[in-house]
Image 1 (cartoon, rainbow, N blue to C red):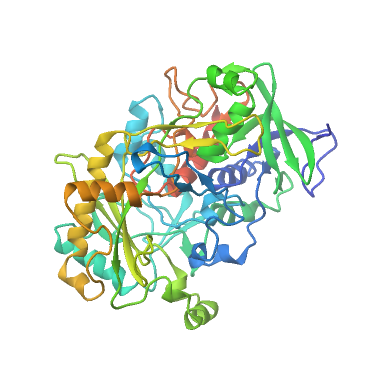
Image 2: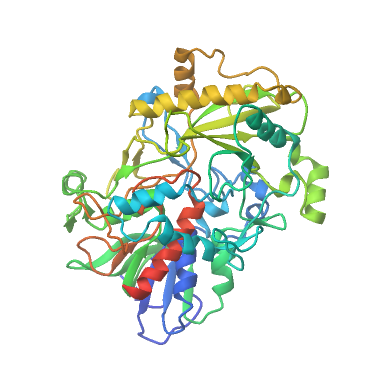
Length: 529
């Protein structure tokens, strides 16, 4: 089997090992590679299983509706049959391209609530409370609101509101206010509650993934090598020390060595790679025929996701996302980077359904498309539990790295999650039943009835994933934690994890911004620990 210390077009000094090999060029991996290579004396290799982020659909925000999701740039996972969803398998997308999910996702920029991070710190992830992570968030941002205690400017990631807002999105915000919600001008400000416009990682009408924001400006550094279409299949170990990785590229298998290995492959692939390396729950590894190198029971456990139940209506007036694909809108975008193709996520609402909840527990996000296909043109609202209690697993299907792992989120296994989403559906129906929405939509096409039993059944029928898997390599100091507060894998020297899998619990919102923050914090910690 060939050995290599040079894995890109650049030619390092012969025999000189890398200081760090980063596995996965998604949000955290792109950040980490760029930040670590700022030190000219630090040699960094980034390995990405997918291709470069050169597909023109990535650049256009609306491109995710042009085949990015479930296409060749998507790992296109499916869950195992979900008991609470009548045995349905739920599609789960993850980017297989430089930029990862950030190259194919919805592009909204939510940090979550300060209680989310204070909860991480209180649960054993010391040094990750809100006051600890806020500087990393600010460092990443180039925020259109300017510098403040909560926001930063001059960072790699543009944080902007849409320039051309759909009347349907504005009507949804107005309807939320009419139904008692506060008008929230900044979901990343002091409060999360309310209805308002969302911020996105878009600049001048173009998507800014982490690879575009962080990695591309660093590509010319002589100490950074980036190799795409290189699928890592296991971590190389000498005893309980990581010494490099093995990867497949172009029909051959290669090895590369480094002083440290950092897994940034996401909450599905990272635990799979650990288990393929013999690190994980011993009973499961033995059952699938994998030699156990280090019994670490928490690997692949604690899987969380944001499942979303859907309400839909026919659109009687106004332009939907399907209409946005017209030739005139494409021309407007090509010439000015304006119009409906220059943004996707525009509005949202964060609600407290449970009396006395310390923070919003449900979100309602409008989509200018019928996600269920009941009516064309259509309008949908995705309702999700922000802090789900249900926990699932990622497990090996076999010892073959090509076989996708078994992903079991166990959606709504905790009955409290189901009751919360039902309560959120009622609020969404109330909001979209407001008079201001009557000018744009008709009566709901789904669900057909709104009594408790019908709403629960609609949840089982309509639930989709927000594609926010997290928690499968949880950070902490208890026996089920996989990494410590410095993101070092317990019991394995020279090996870290830095992606959404280390989250002890999901933040209240989309996880792209928190994952970039994890990359920023990981770089900071690796310089000092």
